[in-house]
Image (tube, rainbow, N blue to C red):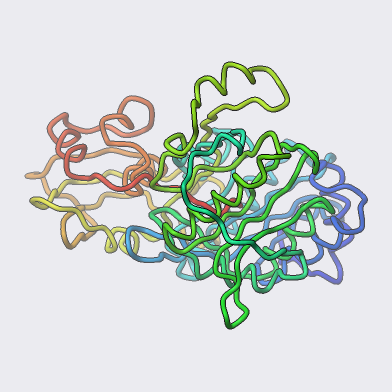
Length: 411
């Protein structure tokens, strides 16, 4: 197996073949064009077997909002292996190579969407928070705000849509994919039914909008794949706009925005669930954790952590399983080692250990989940690879309280 950089002029048709084989795209022209656009602005690798491209990984420059600061994130936006190359170790090897390169380039974090829980844990990833997918009858929304008449948005507006998304308000955990090619490709993959509604500023830029992928244009369900806003007023206007569709559309599906409980805005939510149960238009609240993240630069990540109260210091014995997937020549070998961690108004990390401090033992994935605020230390000690004295776990539970991280931008 040979792993090398993706060359668009040489590898594009092989990439289309792989994605069609695995069912990620069809033979529709727009979908093939979307895949041609998709890697632009990203750094991609391919794996060759017998001089044929059989594996592909796309590493997209991105940012993850950590409290009030953006951190540099390697967003792994695609890992694909052809039919003839399954169970050959390609996915693990090529992804590990991309992660090591990102670490060498100064990225503090790596993240991806998982096809199943467990596989990417081998590369040090830890599972993110539950995302709530809310399905509801838009006519049941209870909102006093009256939306202004919106403007239509089409795939031709991809540049304005991308700029608006880059500049949206960002909550803890929000991810932002930097190349505009990502937005353009996503719109190509939406299909001809996709449409947007939103509001423009006086300078012609989009202030807030949503993009919708309808199952049935007439009655739905409508899936809101993108929801962009900068403040509470804009969010409520977009929700009111959804309500205005309720005369015809029977169901809307969307991810619950960070910091609010959408059920607060739905009339008789339990009645709606009962009468729509098992129908095409079932109102339901689903929770699923489908993204993962891991730390690449431990000092760089921890230096952005701020917590109240007295500082918490402890030894950290960190295990990073990615090393066995890396070639001997790789300069970055993962994060396994012993560290002294202090969490406080100013947080620090140094190599070594202090026998006067309690010791936390963790995999890099479990520690990343703790650091990001996905789960408390005591919970991770039950279900993940994290262990320490009860007094230390309790102290972390009480003081290390971060907002629930949600990525907002799927990849």
